[in-house]
Length: 413
Image (cartoon, rainbow, N blue to C red; front, top):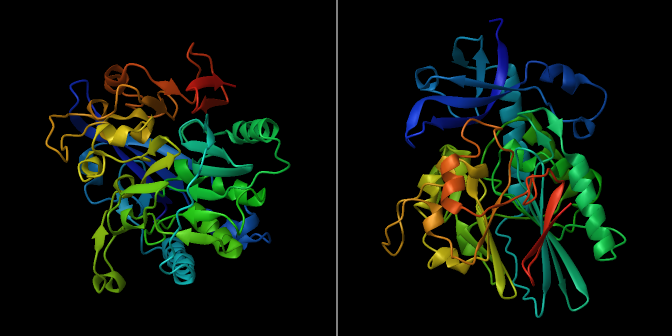
């Protein structure tokens, strides 16, 4: 077959003006046809740049009935055919299982002990990375400074643009503000395995900002056999950091994980069929870890790209998303990350704007019009006052937003 082979990174249903799904979806495809040539290059896998040959198309639901995110497909402009049996797919599936398996074995039953902050001064930074998420939290407490990070994208596959310079600019600002000779991430939280949430991690490893002392919250049980993710997994294996499964039962006083409630895998296998407390979630967005980070008397809720079905399963949110002071709007302001109709205490709700407290600050990370329905006009209308990572409160483009948690002041740079 002469068609190109693609890794199916993302399937996003489209919505009409009446808030109902229409008969089309937006697909993000990674062209892997040249991966064999890339792998035969003399440079090692970890020194290669990621494959940026992404393609975005809209197609009808009839054409993708049997497709799932995370699989390989042949595509010839008209039809999709399963390509999981191709050599490229089998090789990447093998390495994905291999690298994840090694990391799971080395980090079996790891937990993160609570380390309460006594009188913290907190600043958070929400970086303009185009269509993607990237947040940094700096905690100064008793002459000790901790740096946490939640997701890190540095490349927008929708406009083929790198935003690495914005991340570097933010780190330089933090270094000067807090008089740091160098920056190391103490704890990194990954919500889920879409490229627009992890593409910048390799660069952080290269810069030694993430190193063997970094604690990484990543779901290594979840299979996404993308060549780009495999390159990252190999780097993480070589780094050998502490890895913790983001699971609600592993919460502590500062890191409260609302979702998922049990080990989450993409598809059932013989290995997991013998294990209790395992759930299958084929949609990576609804496998998102939801992090409620409580630092001193303030908190921030970061739900990744959680969609309606995931939100409806959460039961730790009463009241007003547990009175979170800051709330990162789910899924870049799309409607399917906004709608919610199940409340654990039976209050009448239809979306997340009914859940947040009046004093909460909604933060929106992403790029307007990157996808159809992003940002959703309904999301903008429901939240009314939103603070953006891509623009200041006058609509001017920026590199990042800084929030002083003590005063709630926002400054854009």
